[in-house]
Image 1 (cartoon, rainbow, N blue to C red):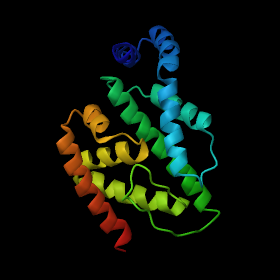
Image 2 (image 1 turned 90 degrees about the horizontal axis):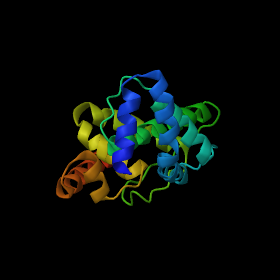
Image 3 (image 1 turned 90 degrees about the vertical axis):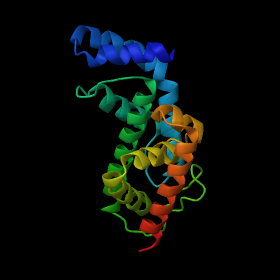
Image 4 (image 1 turned 180 degrees about the vertical axis):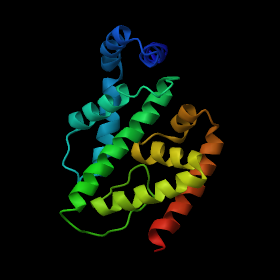
Length: 186
């Protein structure tokens, strides 16, 4: 199944519009359950956003499949980019809600990936910190996205990023400490 996803993604990336639609039609049923799991994981952590799992999956899938600049490599890359798309959708929703409400609480990264983000402000603070982290260490940023937002284990994250589990564990510890300082040290 992983090979089939990779083949379909590569077909979509080739830009043949007639082949694109057929590949898209075959891809969605294969990845749908995993996208729902990702969306559900996001929404469990960000319950201040009033969005349903299905809505988040459909918005993310639409964004993913309309990207022509992506050179799809494999299933892992697809789900990593799906996690980023879902994060952006939720950040946009949080920003929209923050324009109506204001609340400040801190994000705790100690228990990731079982973290509860209690207020939209938390998600926005984390997003700002992740943008800064990405500027000087994109790999650590990807690790945080995969661990925190998608709930992947160290081993799953290592597989998606083609790194060793020990590297992921070390980078996760460093990134988490940096984020604690950035968010809690204000």
